[in-house]
Image 1 (cartoon, rainbow, N blue to C red):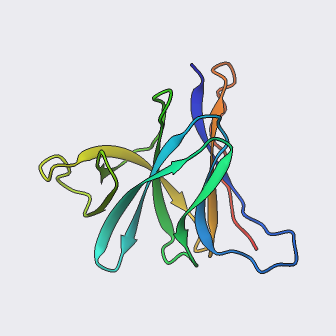
Image 2 (image 1 turned 30 degrees about the vertical axis):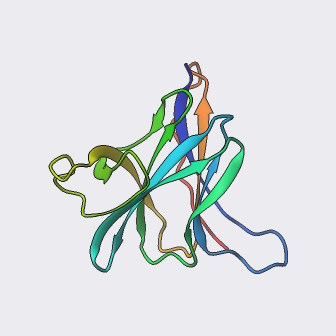
Length: 148
């Protein structure tokens, strides 16, 4: 089974149209994935999900200019069961969710999942690309930047 890796990319606009400002996730695999995002809002920590992203397609998770520097992402391959995760624990649920707070997940009836942190450098938009890497390759995900 291939290892799943995360490639962070740059969302540069090469056309003369105005640049989009948002947080997008692109699924470069052939499988359906479920994605959750975490971020700090004025009222505290929030996690939201699930966005279902078909293979070889993208979805916008946050529309408009980004208001935080750090965002957190967790994704699962709905067909093969692999995941893109990280060391930051936040809450998720089985079905669609928007959860305030990241502590006591299980005690509050949620599940705990490890999210990967993305430092957007206070850019107005950011894109993360989910890819799978053959088990023989094994290169870590490269950090990305976003310039417009």
